[in-house]
Length: 345
Image (cartoon, rainbow, N blue to C red):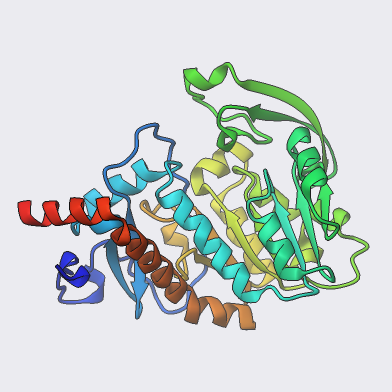
């Protein structure tokens, strides 16, 4: 059986009728999407939304059948942090900075954690470049400092809008719950692993005040604290770097005390356009739109980075998807299981 036969695309009268498609004008302000709530169970199939020639299509992981929007939305919610969509999004982030970072560049990894992106960025910028790895949790920062090559500069601080000290919630059993603000409704099985520690807080501008070159790339994964971190990065944004960051939209805004108006004003003032991780621009009326990735891209308006996101992001997503799908197809057990499912249907 040919691989192509496993994917049946539905037909639509217009692009707006495509499954999961969000209708937007060609040019509009930007917005964010929320990070789905955590689910312990593994999804039956994580569906990935890919753009091909500006048309929204559902592409299934591992040969799952096409689904209607409601099924897609549930798959997105269930796939968070289960090795499905979360891992796929991280691969997209890796592909984007791998395409733009060059030897000698200066990159910043805010929320470096164990170095999942820090070390690949270190290899890309080489001995003549620098990666500033910012990590608030002391033991993780110390581990990065021990393991990292000389071109990684570890900063053991939290990032915010102003310097000072603050309480930082560390959930040892699930670091995705950790941050400067304690998440409400922490699951009972995680409550026992919660530690509240006192940490220094710095602005990104102050950490890089003595830099001798422009910042080329910034990654922020601060579990809701990205807005305040960007508020403290005004001089960094004047370098016009490409920025990839996580944002929980209304959930993060409520937790960290800002509004959607504040958020849009920050990017308008900095003259940055914002896209979702698939390269689609976001408008103000998409602030509450569900079923979107929880990572976003900010690029200076009129820059080469903005053109890169507009023209190449969806192609990167498509190539990564098919690479993942083909790898699964080449596994004997996957081929047998897919063939059986195809016969049953």
